[in-house]
Length: 155
Image (cartoon, rainbow, N blue to C red; front, side, top):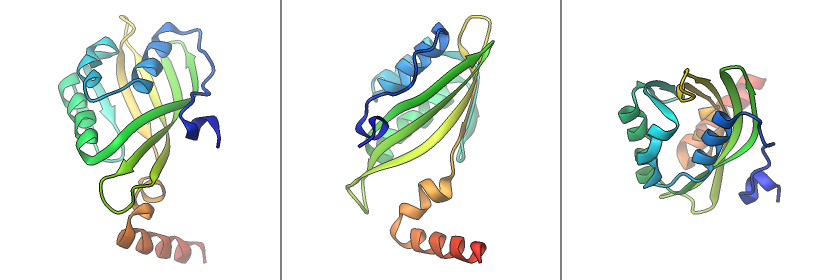
């Protein structure tokens, strides 16, 4: 089992304190610590992923709180992190167990582009991951359809 799947972070230590703070926040994230987002996010931060596009800590917090109602034992393992000026990029594994369908641990692999403001807080967070491959294909009925469509597209 690789470090990323076992839950051990293999991300290299960054010299950027802002990035280290974000990585530590997400790797230790709990339903309670979601309320501490102000420690890493600017008040009017922008957040976008395949399902959401919001602005402001309250809206971002709501997305992550919703995650805890949708899946069991969610956690992030950052596998790569790098910073350049006021921008950063991390790759991560999101590990969780579905509340229905399968109790096996699932893994979504993704990446985040982050931008920091003058105070060192995240004011831009864009997640990139393939919802079809990483999520829909793992669902019983929809998964079969997605895999069939993928085979059609290849031929």
